[in-house]
Length: 107
Image (spheres, rainbow, N blue to C red):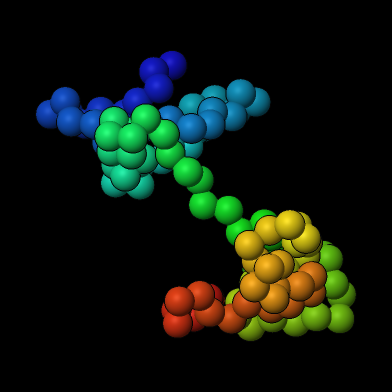
């Protein structure tokens, strides 16, 4: 399988990321607009720094399996946090509920 996706006109559309081997024809790809900044960073600086918060968080659909008594209408639940992470340094803690990021509500 190729590691990139092309549209009929030969333009790069995305980059394949994961293929599910237990199912026929199912795979996932990263859209090219998501990758453009990474490619630019590699070509100009020779490296790319991945963003890292240091949390494992879950949305309202997963919470009932983790915390039976917790009901979320919106936001994400911080299930775990790395004590050496930027998130911990800025005051986030395990069991916090994030309702917005950069003044944008998390649905």
